[in-house]
Image (tube, rainbow, N blue to C red):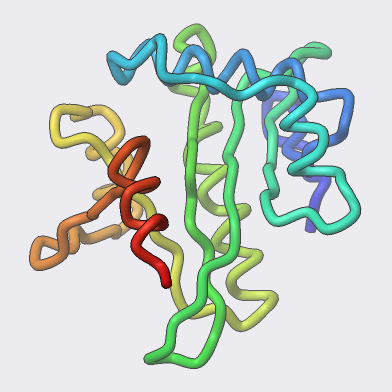
Length: 168
C-alpha cells in the first residue's frame, strides 16, 4: 500500500528513523495548538527507540512534500475484547497549517483505515478536543461518530504513582 504518490506529487509513506526530528516538531506544534506547549517531554532519542527499537509499539505514516515531512499520523494497536481483534488508536494527526486544504489529513486517515482493512481490525479510534472544530469537521466528513456515552479517563503523575503504591 505505502508508499503512495499523491496527486500533487507529495508522498504518503511509513515513517523512517531519520524522520524522528520532524515527528517531534509536529508533536510540539500540535501541543502548542492544543494549548499545552509545555506538556511535551518527548525527545528524538525516545522517538527513535519507540518507533524503531527491537520491539516497536508505536507507528506512523507521514506525508513528505518537497523533501519535508508536512503531515503525520501516529498510531498504535489496541485490542477489543468484544470483537476479539486488534484495532488502531490514532494518537496524533497533524498537518502543518501551510499545507492544509490539500487533503493530506484525509489521506493519512485513509492510510490507517487501510491498515485496519488489510489486517482485519474492526476499529479505528481517537479523541478530539471539543473546541477543535476544523478536526471535528474532517472527522464527520469521513463518517466518524462521537462516542457520547464514553468518557476518557486518565491517571498521571502523583495519582498514578499513588495507585501503583497500593499494590501488595
